[in-house]
View 1: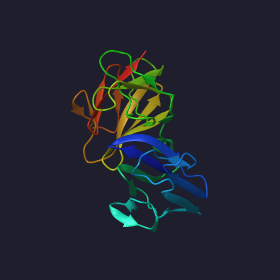
View 2: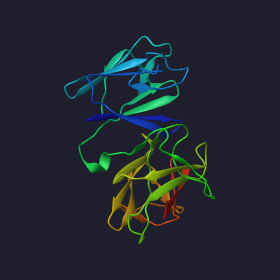
View 3: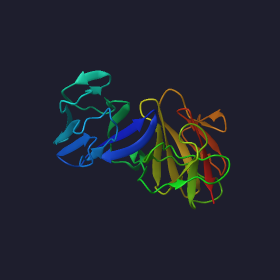
View 4: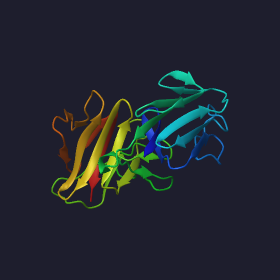
Length: 227
C-alpha cells in the first residue's frame, strides 16, 4: 500500500494512506488532501490508483506540480519520489506491510501545547506531525511524549501512542522509534547523517533511550519525556 508524507521546511505535517481509486489534492476543503496555502490551486492535482500503480496528474494548476524537481503533467509514482507543490514536499512511499514502516500521525487537536519548562519536542509547526518518539530505559513502556526544543515548532509536545513511529525529513534524515517491553528504542532509517542522542551519533542498529534524552534529527532537537 502506498502513502504520502507531506512536509513543509523539513517538518512532517501529515501522512495520507492511498486507499481510493482517486485521491484529490488542493487548497479547497473538499479535497482528500487539503493544503491550505495560496501557492496551491483549489484543485491542484489528482492521484489515481490503477492496480498496484499510482499516477499523479496536474489539474492545470497555477504553479504546477513537480516530481524530483521536474515539472510534470501526468506521471507514474515510484517509491521515494518527491512531489513538490509550492513549498510543500510530498514523499511517496510504498509500504512493505511490516510494522517498521508504520508512522503515527497526530491529528489537529490531538496535540497538547507544551507547558513544561525546557522546551518541547513535537515535530509540528502547524497541525499534523509524523510522530517521533523516544523511550525510557528501565521505566517500562508507560505514557511517553516528545518535546521540541528548537526551531519554529519549539514548545510543542506530542504523546507517543503507537508501537512504531517515524520522524524526520523524508529524503534527508528519517528515524524510527519502537516501543518494546523494556522501553523505547531509536533506529536510523534514512539519510547519510545519523541522528544523535545527547550529542553522540547512533552507531548500532538501535539505541535504547531514557527519560530526558535529547535527540537531534534533521536539525531539530527533541527531548524524550516519560512519566
